[in-house]
Image (cartoon, rainbow, N blue to C red; front, top):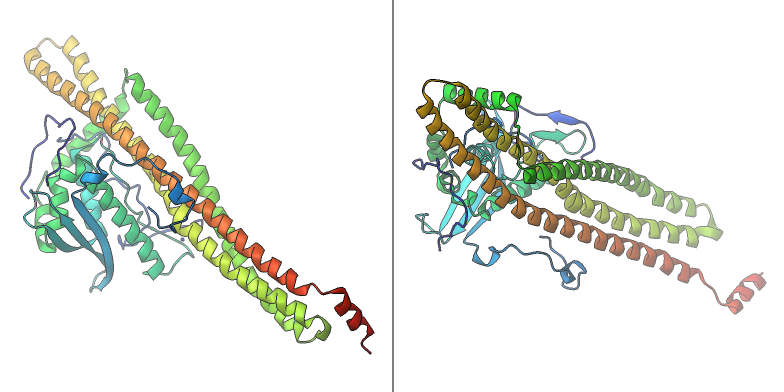
Length: 433
């Protein structure tokens, strides 16, 4: 079933032929396939445009009702990113991922597709979407960085973290009423590797892209004079949100690092009691009991730290990068308006070619209106998604903390109960010769 797009369409749009993460960052430019979430943008700001979580049934999280996406029941495209594979050539080593797509959309020739993609392909898709829809919010990609000391090159845990991020990136696009209908997105999901390589070569050349970049820089320097108040409010919100989410991200990373260090100390702590029990016969039972409690608490702590690293840390860091994406979208909107304002000023001063300039201004006015409407529509969608994701992460973390402390408490309470003795037993022990 083809999705109906309830949105404003760009007047100039054309169709073409088809983990501890607080350590020091190491830039691995030679291998674009090692990343966690990306602030990189392949589109110059201001460029012209063409227009979940698993829990138990009794979980407290499952008792909370989140805002549901209005289009959830009409989802007609399902994407899975899995099965990462390492490839070694004479000049590079990289990872590809299997991208499985199932769809009922009529614009696809088949209902199922299976292709392999590397990180550079995801980056290309993101750039094309931003190029075509500069004031829509495209979800961030994994960064081209590895955290020093977190994982080794191509470590399985790291690759899995990266796979989840790429999976989320594609499904965010699939759920978007406009981005999901992009021809570039369709080609990404359906074309074989050689077909995608050929398709990528289409489009504007280097000089054309340079011209767009120069124009974007000029508009950015010029600035916007009469930004609508609603976008001033959005900008203030984004700045405040960015500061708060960045602080939470940094503190959470620090907490995870400290908890991992505590866990390593805990692993050495229990054996010390066990070793001591061998030379202290009168305290042997108690020493072994404490050692056992520490060992069980150590296992619970390891699980709790892992949950925090897998659940809360990625979401916070993801929205740190989303904040940067929002700032870039707002700047691109401002650049479009700045160009429109500059043309109006030129019309007031020029004596020749007024008709041609007036026609250009009319087109720019349409572009400004489209850009404003696109951003306003996407802003509400992004807020609903952000609030749902953060609620889920916070509640899951709270539930896991309760579970962790209850289990550790039960371990120590059991030990205390085992050490209680009846008065008669104590008397008999004292009278033993």
